[in-house]
Image (cartoon, rainbow, N blue to C red; front, side, top):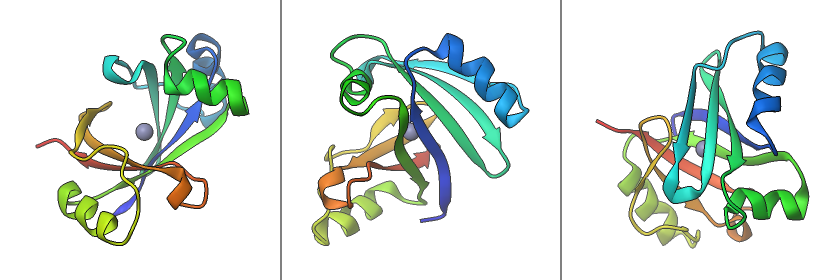
Amino acid sequence: MLKIEHLGIAVKELEQSIPLFEQLLNTPCYKTEKVYTEGVNTAFFKTGESKIELLEATNTDSPIQKFIDKKGEGIHHIAFEVENIEAEMKRLSALGFELLNTTPKPGADNKLVCFLHPKTTNGVLIELCQEKQ
Ligand code: ZN
């Protein structure tokens, strides 16, 4: 894995959290993007080499809404950038890690992504991401 690409943070309302993180990080939000397939609105901030991704649910069935109902706002996932997502998925699957999707799917910020089930990663939701060519 190349680096921590971003940290995903679940929030109740982007409208309140964007200004808060702009103050905290002292940098403007550079992008907001809705990911229909995941039921989320996202907002991105650059912090050096890595990014912060804020996630807000767009409906009550959204995994983000379920996360907030269960655990409240907070760190939701860690995303690692990989060079070849399919090779990495194959490698991890062979080692017994449970992939939440069997083929890479489109994610926010021009990425192909795959998530690993937290039950095989010490309770941490892991996202693999590869920049779309
Ligand atoms: Zn993410």
